[in-house]
Image 1: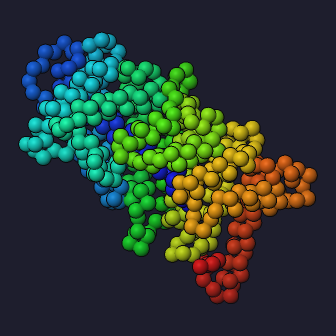
Image 2: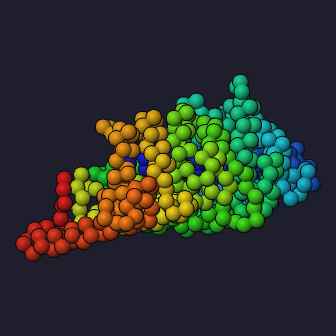
Image 3: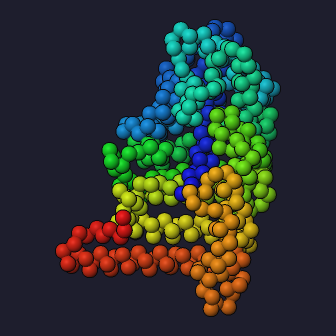
Length: 450
């Protein structure tokens, strides 16, 4: 479970990071952008809100915060709609001085700096929280956070750091240069927001489930709820991956070290130690293969696929498979489905390793978990690693099999098949037992163990 939650934290933190980095760009669409770019209109009046229909952007932080706390009426699709409208307005009302086809990093940096100064005065007069609320909602903490309208020491450097991160992530996820943002790239972001609207609308009111905050004793999560969440999360991944899988786009690579520094910009310190960065490298090697220290542009789609499945597994384990410390018949069915779906993800990883994930790669992850203090209490890396050969070579392949020795050297399709067959047979046995107990007058939901 700790492995899954750690991996989940990386997915969530990356999404939160992107939200925090894109927020300033979205907010700029609400003001007179032609002050700083090459629009023909010569506007000299102070920066003001020009479209009250887009004022929702000012409350994005509050909306995200309420959603993650489980507000019943909180609908993430409305946030996507607002951001989409704001980006359209930004594109329609501005153009760069250097080129009409986009904006340079220096142009946006100049705009943000002037815009933030103007908004700082407005914030003092109306109490506007803006990006501060958004940052707190995305990071879950206000300690040492970057205040968008801060005029104190280092404020300008912080704002410029945001611009640097926006363009760095743009080059990683959308491709292109770290020095320019093109209209085509902005339109592709809008396409993602529009495509995400439908699955986001089905996630209304379940923010506290996604953030693992829901108290089952207060408001239960049904198996049907979990099915809807899983379907929606996977559809969201497909929407994003339709962009990440675009051919003919050259995307930048990012090192694990750069990722750690980027996370620190929004106070996510999951990779703040050498041990955790080593763990991230070894997990990347295990699931994706390739260079352990670098995430290439073409690898992001598979990373998102893998980690979204981790999210589904974590939610099912926490809210569906076990209920009040018991495994019910319904939970047994869900476990069976979860193992079958997880097998597909593992098979993709095995395929990326040429048919077998070597025992060395698995042992490296176990060792890293121990170094990062993430192994469950009572477990030792050395003991686990010593048993891997026996588990793969005998327990999950059978000593009588002619390839038992080869099977002992790593995880392969043979082991995945054995595990799924075992869980399927075990689940079938639970159904048979439940029917026998039902005939005897017992409850239809059979509790296997407490």
